[in-house]
Image (tube, rainbow, N blue to C red; front, side):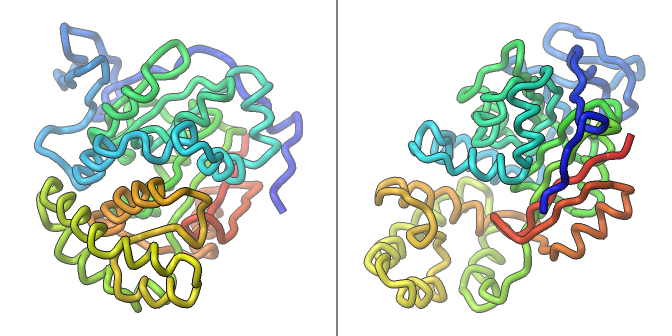
Length: 334
């Protein structure tokens, strides 16, 4: 069962935004034209009013950036007409904590790996002040969907070098991200460090399944993840054009869907999501690219995630199979 939240450990703090600091040395930053500069001379550009707190030259998330800018509305509940993202976010946050976000004092909430904003949309429906961060250029899609305002700010930054002091966020929310980082345990530790004493960390992670090893997808991924993102995106579109009609033809039979999925590297959700054919195709385009171009794809069991949280000293741990594998939340004592 999910942990109960009582008045002694659940009061979410009100106050100003946590300061943005230099991710290299955590010194204060000053605005100089279109840049933020610290006393040590580290300089971070500001483009489209989004601080770019990452080194130039690209990174392992470039394919995600192109993907989310290409399919920036596909997974938004306001676009699909179904509460898919809302239901997942509320399940992971937990109803008691969600009630505090909706009706309590405005909380400072850090969303790491915001992408185009499928969960940003949901988090902004609460009273929280939402700081949305992504390593990739997906921040641009996020800003197009949900412009910055007095309750929403966006930064391009690395989860392993976040530009904030530790322990300042009432809720740290990170879904669909940790399995794609170089070291999941290190990533979880960095997220936990951002959580204030008494605050909550909400995460998920892929879990290992036998089906992954019985499909053609790993073979395609071994090639496509090494392609330039633009080329890989064309490949994923081509694969959807070839295989999606087979998935659609088999949509009424679980047995046939299982058979097609062994041959096809394309992801479809006829068996799981209440989407019409056009939305099914759009989700197939997006998630097939996501599935076959991620540089890192780690798997962890619920026991491994729980152990990581326990090692960090977390309490009130809830950790179960669900969603994309494992869903978990915990509180930092304080």
